Length: 329
Image (cartoon, helix red, strand yellow):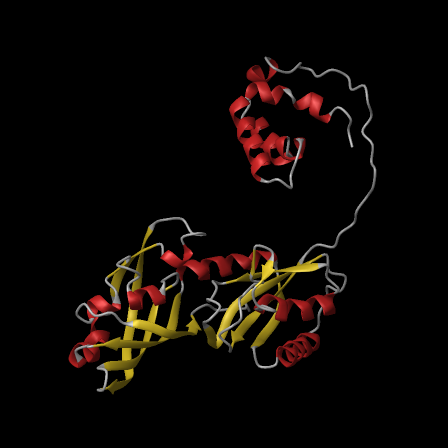
């Protein structure tokens, strides 16, 4: 603690009045952060000082600086263990389970999440104070994650038990899978260095993913349906879907559908309705549900366009595979 902290850096307000006006706006937006804590954050001060040259700085601040009149005081010392990262893959077998806690306006929508089902057990074994789930993408709450599972890593905060044997990892897998009671399962758990997490981010953006979509459509040409797989590979243009506009930047994203095929076609003549299974492999980040139903014309071409202008819908969706070598060897 240093009593003259704010007095000494007030010169930055004169150097960059516009910058600190922006910071004041942020203070008003974040009501739980008040006063100069955010205004004079360490990150902001260091970034501004890095822009200065000596001549400009000396116009606003004495060089050399004046002798301090107060001593810096150390109020307390806090020791924390560095984070460790437990990597693996998870399967999700139910259609009412979010990846992370689903809380809207301080109200929990579902009782648990993938993160909690995994994190609670790992935290108990490592005696960590908390955890963060880092995953290669995320499935919707109503989408199953099958196949070999979704690559993930769990960041353990301030753990006390940091050296985990292979046997402890296998025991941890069994513990998580038993307590999850068929909702999820994990495999290949191991401790990895922080540097390997970059692979997860690249996998989220670059790798191929394979899906199965269970679809329905009325008044479709059966020949077009049988031949739709032959139109891949193709590139689709997807505007940010309506269902995620509240949390995603509005943009048009080009995504590649590398392969697809239709199978298990069942026709109900009474109402001219056809049910079918669409399997497809796509570039990571493709919105599959929107490719099927078109999202009010925001995805072009959509499956409906390829089938001659009909209006198919996606009844259910499964992720079958994520093409990423994880955890790292």
